[in-house]
Length: 396
Image (tube, rainbow, N blue to C red; front, side, top):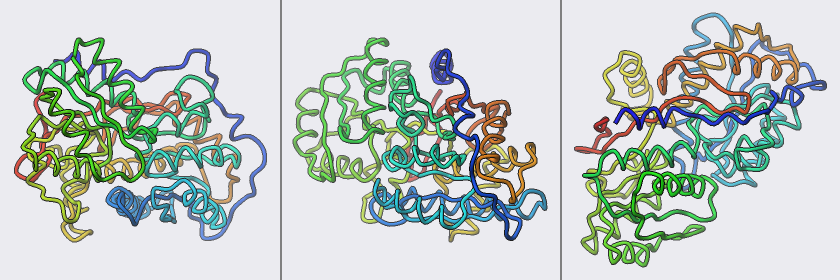
């Protein structure tokens, strides 16, 4: 089973790709003001994906307060609601730019991220997304092969790793199921990207996929897909989708007495906080994530305790942990590079790229994290299972 984690740790390095410091060269107006480095970001603070955006905003605000209290580099944070919509994200980007943004947390979700990443390159602003995991966020061609922006980085592990990692985990645990059905969103780069690498790795690992179902848009009736998966005899249903449609699939499967093993990815994190959802239906659901809130290491316990104290007992999810890590990684890089608030975006960007492609970072979501020249992070996903209404580590 250790082979699985070795596979999951691999991040592809594109041969011959030069660090795109040119994306950060020249231009950029100098900033001044209160001496703080201005960080901007956007995510869904309202709408069906709001659990993600609010977790990122909350954790980023908490981390900024902690960093500032240490007395070194000083940050200020502006965070806008993009409603998980590409056009709204572009509007939010303009608002952040007008507000003096010097470094960015980019976007929370992938489709808005893909829409605004070219703007970060155009404006020579360094960005790191907590959770926009699609290759389209950091690659202009969206295929993780050519055209890396060079100044847009990821804290989350990428969709290709989630897909291949999920398949390898399932193959290493045959008791989870032998006949696999998949339901994915075919107009979403996040969902499609995970599905494509899952399917390829499943073939390599000898897994049998007996049904592939798709949907698009805001579809909420999955009775056909659920029925087809059940008719195909699938005893494991892989869901590389966000928690809202996943909750609807779980609800509809329950209505027809279909009880396969359900297996999701990081987009499933947050399903226990979804208003109106019967969380008992999520019992036994597996998912991959880089963070488990009830892990017993001191760093995680301290983060969870502080987050719960600050946000009315709310348990932080993986999106919160990734955002928290983003702020601390930015602080580490800024301090090492001597970044000050009066520097231009272009100068900051060049120094941040240099730091991120050479430093090692230890955070909540991974130890000894590194980034390659294309902005991809190297760290391992962790499997968790929902038991008694909580996320707990699954067997390795």
